Image 1 (cartoon, one colour):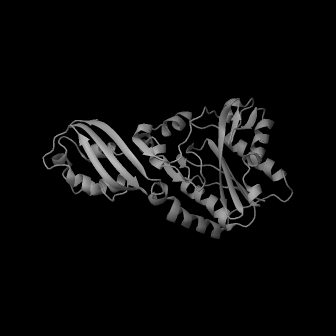
Image 2: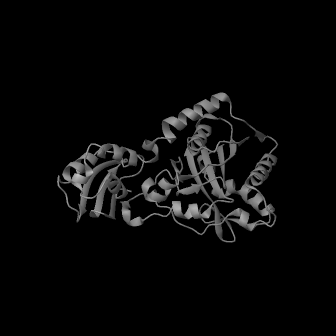
Image 3: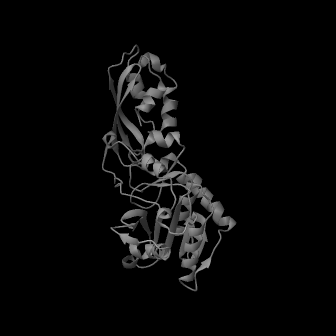
Length: 326
């Protein structure tokens, strides 16, 4: 098995790396990697319904949709991510406990009461420290997990704190659980880099055929191409969301503004605006201008630029409308 310690912290590049290994490297692989601030959304989730949009926007947190199902997770440099890609028969591929076993063994060696619990979690003292997800491609599986080692817990809770009343859809929702950092349970302090090294050494020692591997220049070129054409695009990260209805009401200087949207494949199909505001030019031109626009801030701002918003919504500006749309 090829063992890769991937040093990039670009979340778009790293999620692309998982797909590249799965589809283009023949040998089984194990990889350790870290992402800078990001929310990694499950394949079948409604992205906007999983994030605290204002907090994410204000803190410059990246949003990336992954290949595998499951719930949304927050990543920062205090997290350690691991990936296995292996060949097998359909009956042997999906085994969450098998792929988490090396991680649990290292955690137990460090003196923690680490266990595999539920459908796909690693816990310490009953609190979740890692979730796992899988994706099967032909006769191969991608199994990956995110270990909370010394993550900023305030960001974890705030970035994923959403208002469920805003969205009505059939997408798979994340289930909040009690979480903790591994570092809080260690008797002897350890850095995330030291923890990473211990896991890599453990996996290398599991089989005499396991060996370190570094990406070639060709590997890196192909991963960058996949990053730029897929994982860094709004079409993938937002446009792949299931059909949903959105509703939000805000208070502005001009009065109450309630936005109602019907969105399909990330594109606004219907718009209805209500409120107790005054309007000189009416709101129908604005409603019509938002139809067929991606439910994404940059695209919406562009669509609104042609209008004197204060004439359509007295004592309001484009920022008020955008606040009501996320």
